[in-house]
Image (tube, helix red, strand yellow):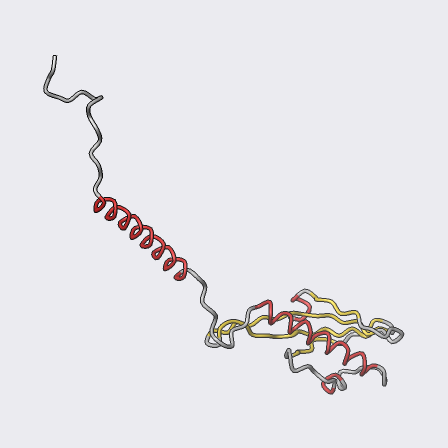
Length: 158
C-alpha cells in the first residue's frame, strides 16, 4: 500500500546550498572570535596592576632593617675596640641610614656588653604607610672579632 510518501530507498537528503554552508561557517567563526575576545578581555581585566611608585612591602623593609641592624652591630663592636662602651658613648656610635635605631639598654654580663636596640621601618603605599619595628640583642665579646646579633622579643625593647 502506498500512502503517498516516498519510499526511504527513494528518498535522497536535500542538498545544502553553498549559501547556507557559507553562512554557517561564518557564524561559527564569528562565535569563536567573540568568545575568544570576551575571554581575553576578562583575563586582562583580572591582571594585577603595578603598585604606585614608592610602594614597598613589609619583606623589603624588614630586609633593610636586618641589614641596618647588622651594620649597627659591627659599628658597636668597632667602638668597643677602643675601650668599654658606656651609656655616654653609645650615641656617638655610627648609625646606619637604612634603618632608624633606638637604643634601649646597655647592661654588662662579665666581659660581655649586651646592647638591646630596635629598628624601625615604614612600608606600604606612599599615602598609607604602616610602621614595623624589630627588637635586637647584640653581644659584644672582647675576644671575638664578630658580634652575636639576634632578634629579641618586643618586650625586651618595649
